[in-house]
Amino acid sequence: MDLASALVGAPAVRVSAEAVSPDGAVALLSYPDGSVATVAYVSGGHPKVEKERIEVIGAGVVATINDFVTTAWHAPGGEGRLVPGGQDKGHRAGIAAFVRSVLAGTDDPRLTTADCIQSTLATLRLRDAAAGGVGLAIERHPLAERGRQAES
Image (tube, rainbow, N blue to C red; front, side, top):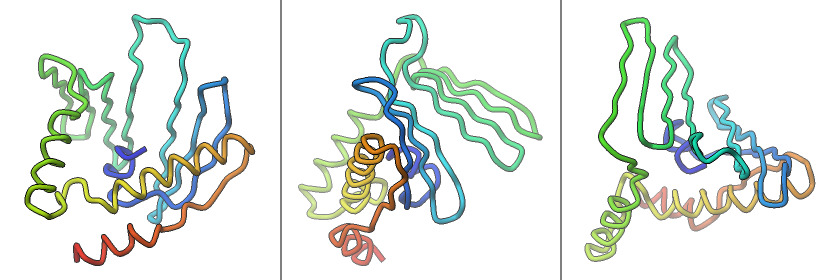
């Protein structure tokens, strides 16, 4: 969900979800600009099929990330494919950026404390929405709001 928010450029404001297995859910995230994202957390698929697939569609462009290994895009100006040579979910770079910001006493502008708080809150609201089969608002947490104001 944090990646969807990063792609949209804003935190989600509402989540609707449905539990699909004891450890899975399908969620619809809504954003302030009208964007939506669907996220499926499911298990039990075939091991030869990617576990994570991201599709971004808009302005005549479709981009697909498969298991953080390949990226392909189709746009009015052409199409392409990127295969960087291995799976990279950004964990190492994220941890390194976190350590640098802690040591420097600042937020990393690519992943702020406010972003982390909002992503956690959205994940907890997804759990609640899936348990009740309803849509729920995702409030701005006061600490996240304070973090955003400090960044401005």
